[in-house]
Length: 448
Image 1 (cartoon, helix red, strand yellow):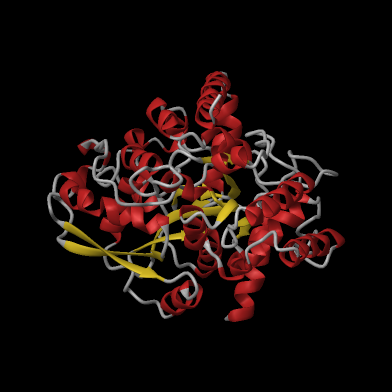
Image 2 (cartoon, helix red, strand yellow):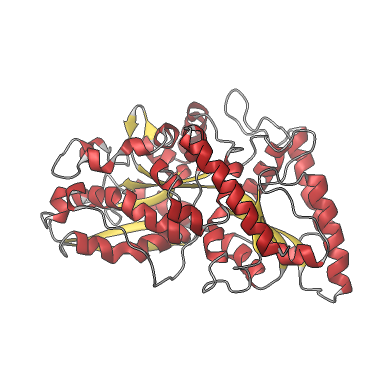
């Protein structure tokens, strides 16, 4: 049986199992709260589902003022999906609202966003951001409450929007003092990507898609791959790549996999714990042994994609957001039919069910300083609607967490990573809201 046939068999079984579970309520109730984001890329032939006019009565009837909205975010798949769909919002508003984007480099996003928001700048209307910026701004009063949207029947029809389609935890993550301050876009986390064709070539047994590998199994496979690659003269291909430009996140994942309490009762980080030190020492040992590419020290999300595309690595612990792009034949011909997935590795003393996955939560916020708040609120609801969310879940840019999309047969049929992805988020390690709030409040007070 070829690797592709094995993957097709795996996909069919796991999807049937998942649909059976979700039909019983377990899948959507337990798992959909942690759906990750997919990467964005150019794809012209898309199935478009259009939000109905009754979703946003004022916007769809041309009742909004003629204006230009500015949507800000750090560079990456999230904002790329906004760009891809922007003209559709202009058409939906009868041409009244144009959308422009301020795309900020990931390395300077925190400084830029803090500077703009603390200056009460009206340069940005909508911010498509992660929780770090959210908690800082929530305490400072930077965000327009979503009741300004849902309490106005001219702006949105709540029944058509169906906020109940989101799991309660997704909504809870963007709620501050019982006030909903944003609409969820997606949640993402790192999982294991691997070249199934190279595993077969070098006689490496593939991991279970739902249970993955322990660190010991990953290390043994990487040693075998290192020797085989050297024998083939492939000295520019490495067994493993970690996104070490995200070093705090990588360490978080590894330390949590070893069972460390990541935060104490006062919500302070415990990266000096024995488990955290052991995690750092393990990563360093793999670097010293040549199992990890030395370039990984500077690798972030896009570099991880390129190492797989250009056959510079066999295994990558990569954000699940990359799966859509790397399985698309037009965007990634070298990996489209050869890549497979499993959950993030784990320590054998703890097991594969350990809560260990850092979750990057993204949502759409409206700036309190925007001069176009009605249009901005309308855009946020439009972008997170079932129909537009279908586009970025299906074609790249996010996973909304909506239960109706979680069980959408067209989406499930298009993405073979879903079974591993959902299992991976069953091991999400999200801080309790109260702990995260306390920590971020302390951090915000230290920089103001």
